[in-house]
Length: 391
Image (cartoon, rainbow, N blue to C red; front, top):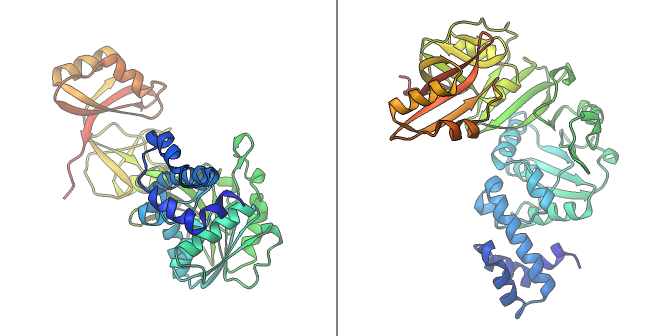
């Protein structure tokens, strides 16, 4: 009997429930006590699963995480619930009622699809992973909508389904895999599988080169609370645009309009830092147009403008000083203004933020933000802080 089987017994479920709020620092003492009442193998399995559930709360939320089952790789590679839910919503809005989730992992995306009313075939070739996905469907009351199959995804007939979702493995024995043809299965196979159905989405690494996006797909870069989480290749009928960026929560979606690069202009009163999904999608020009702004340097994704506007796709800062790079100048300025809380951002600079803080030793009651970057090719320091809320 494997660890998962032990945990699915009544004794295993009860032990996991009792370990919901256990403190990892006291694990040895807890294990010693529990082994007086339960088999050692079950105690080890339950403690390991309890640790995984605590890690999973960040992705799945406490309500789901403490009912679900995980593997170490499953926690690491699973899609965050907010992202999976957004994607499932898109499928449902297209009228998708059934989908084949290929490379389903522990079932996070299948769960989101089922909750959106989509019937799912979830497939993974690893027996333990497939069993974990099945246990999660049952634990969350979704077993009637999710069929889990342990099989090679390349051998699955997807003809009975409206859509396919493919999340190829992007890790190998040496860590992350960056070549899409080294994914498992390769991206080229996933693209052809997508073309066989009316609707499809392929989850890929955010760093994929734009030239690898097929012409008949839309590429969407997704961020959640400012962190870029993934890119998705969508096949959903005639695409009106080739690239989009979506920010969660929201969602706020920005579509590419094929604009030329923004002009470079002197630093104005406000500096805008585009969301990472916007940068990855190469849509900085679209944001610059909305802000009536330009770039501070042709190679740097900071937008500057004399106007303060509210946009969801970029964070605004009010700039008070533009100085040539120099630690002595910065240290003196911060000392004169009593800045003790210093946020350091960099783009196009080799200086590490922690090293800069160590050297300038900020002290005082005030806060400031310093941008280490380039303006028209020259290293500069932009000093300021978050802009007031635009009206």
